[in-house]
Image 1 (cartoon, rainbow, N blue to C red):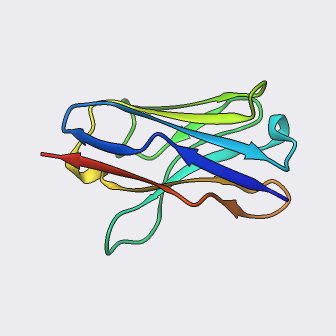
Image 2 (image 1 turned 90 degrees about the vertical axis):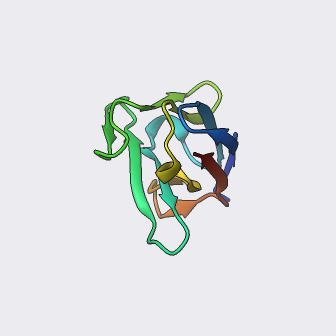
Length: 114
């Protein structure tokens, strides 16, 4: 059974930082591409960043230079370091993998106040 559990969300002022983590189980983590997505109120879910099994990364233009995705294969975790946060980054952030299927975590709320 695949499980993805996000943590690290919260309330932060604009310009601040947060670090999200996602703990994965039920997959061969080292072989999986992992991703972060987000959904703001009234909007569709959107891509934020992905990291492949070889640690190649890809970012949405809106977060390039501010967010960094990383992985720790020893701990089966993928992280999202978010710096210089803006109010428009406010959303529920979801961890996802497409390893032998499509799987999503329950999400963690990030709120950036102006």
